[in-house]
Length: 482
Image (cartoon, rainbow, N blue to C red; front, side, top):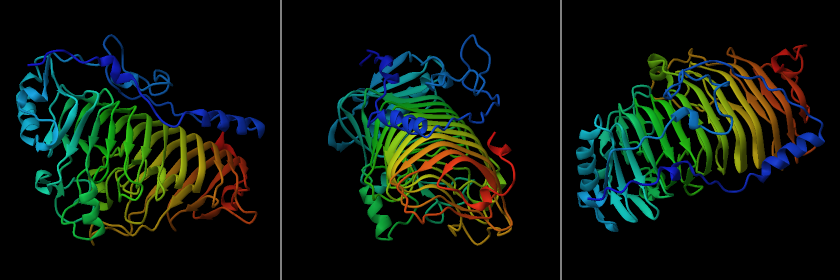
């Protein structure tokens, strides 16, 4: 059996493409326009990963502005390290390794309280169906290692729908389990030396396109009801559905990832924290057929009943493209509430939207205290969008009187080049969409007659070009941007 431990130093190495030269352009443009920013900070204490010898961290004062490392503390060194080959794995890209992965995890589970375990996946192509992780465990993909998702839907078993959704997201009833799955776990690491997990999702996309899908597609990685999670330094490709989905989780770090799907692959979101708290997503490059990052918290009456919000989330230094959706989306499944979110230092290009907040009648819930700053966009159709009217409900028991509330959205230091449309801010009649602040927002390339579109919203602006809509000018005060 292999006992040589992998170099954990490689875990914290990350790469993104393209380079961050766009940030220089961002601040140069802002300087030229003589715009200065003093963004409103979120200063709310909450528990993060306990670091030995220290007290609980504070979101702003103790959070390293350059790294998520404070979220995770010391990287674990597992006492029991084995290779997939020790369990009969064959890395030829053809032989099924489903039994090998499941046997390995079943065996390594016994070390959960005995120093933890690490499963090394060597160089090669390792075809497998779904398998479940265990606590105090590291899945480590060595350089040249590729985990391939099985093309047999039977190897993605049907599981119960999430209680905050009430049914599968795409179809009634249950849903296919994710390729890599875990429920009720603690201290889980998925990392490596730039290895790859490829969901081989085309068969699933074709089922969707052909309208022959019987159950909701599986995610590439889903962890439920779990805490202390690190996913880093890997490439994820071709997810059947959402790529990384932590749901009902806390203390989650996703760092230094490359996530790639064809730009027409349906609903292949990059990273979707869902009813989760204390989440840090940074230094990732994403090409997707849907949102690069989407923050969620349950669907209509099921999310309202569960009342499990997403909160205390940092998203930063993300770059990528999505021709159909947004760089960062909040919602539309937001019925459990979403609050205390910071999104910063992003680069989005050739996309339908840069930043989008999505909701609708029936959602209920709330979105509050959201800070979005230092975003560069290029050739983005609608740079900033608040949208309604998806008419997307789990069943006929949704409540049309369940109206969402939005308050305290702070958007600053935005530069959009070659924009197609001015911002669209479409609230809901009778709903509370207020406290929207736009400061130092410059949208270039619009036609001379392009105008903001605003309905049922209120707020204020400071140093915004082109001139915003009257809904953001006529309140006689700029205190919401102070």
